[in-house]
Amino acid sequence: MAAARRSRPVRVRDLVIGGGAPVVVQTMTKTDTRDVRATVDQIHRYVDAGCELVRVAVPDMEAAQAVGAIVRASPIPVVADIHFDYRLALEVLRQGVDKLRINPGNIGDPDRVRQVVTAARERGVPIRIGVNAGSLEKTVQADLGRTADALVESALRHIRILEDLNFTDIVVSLKASDVPTMIAAYRRMARERDYPLHLGVTEAGTPRQGTIKSAVGLGTLLAEGIGDTIRVSITAPGEDEIWIAWEILKSLGLRQRGPNIVACPTCGRLQFDMWPVTQELERRLATLDVPLTVAVMGCAVNGPGEAREADVGLAGGRQMGLIFRHGQIVRRVDQARMVEALWEEIQDAAREKRARTPGPAADKEASDAIAARTGAQGDHA
Image 1: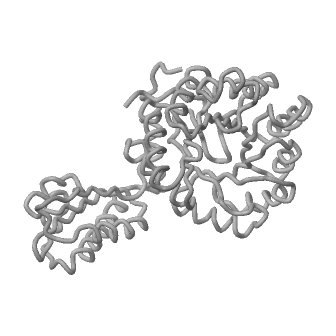
Image 2: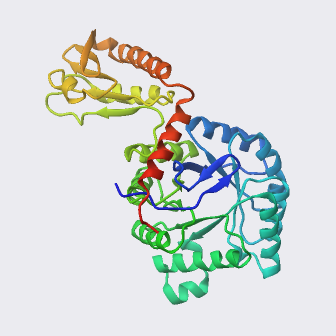
């Protein structure tokens, strides 16, 4: 994997984006922001799923005025997503929002932009410039079409507006639904500026297609050391977006949260109905936040050896299963008891790992990731 791109740190409440910090997982609420209770309840569910930063839509003044109560009740930083109306930006800043998503070129004359920037600076609130291939300025599209160069040019125009006002507390995104376009745009922006980059494939689609598009787009860039925060955008509940984001980071070794499942693809040697076992296991493992590797193998002959690096594993055989820890068989159980026996061993392994880890596991993981990314930074602009 390539060395991490060097980006400047941007603080959002008690969270750091960029500067070698672990890649931040975020998503967006699906509720009507004016419904404070529903929005806060959803944010808490997102936090349980692993969300670290949450964005809310602010379409009107009633929604802007609801942001204050949402921020006060949210355990994670809140970003206000605003288009066109600078008054909404000023109101959410008064309400105490932690971050703005706004394109300064779209909110009117320079004085309006100056008012928003001044208010954000006074409160220490960063601004994300969010460029989207579906809403590029007509002048940019006329010259460059809906290309990667057009995305970068649009972003640079917005960036220059803020830089001319001596405001550099900026995060940048350049999203497209076309994966190659999105990848090319982020690569170029990574060379142009050192602002933290918010990665995303916009409007990625249904869970099946959207998961693949997001994994390819985000995974390619993250493997190149590009990207400081990610949002998966699929037509599904936010919890699903968060889960996919974490799996992308885990697959690259950038973050660890919860168990990793190793499972064989099955073949003609399979001696038990493996699919229901893995599905039930995945459902139960979703309740754990301890980083364990759990293996489910369909063959009792080769299973333990093939998954010897797993913390806990199951190798199914005819009418029975072998439970193993780190490649060593510890139990033989009837097929009907395989899931329950495996779950007992997983819970025991989780307790052991918690006991060996001083302090919150997430804090230790974050510290390790910061050290790794900072130490790996190379000459990428």
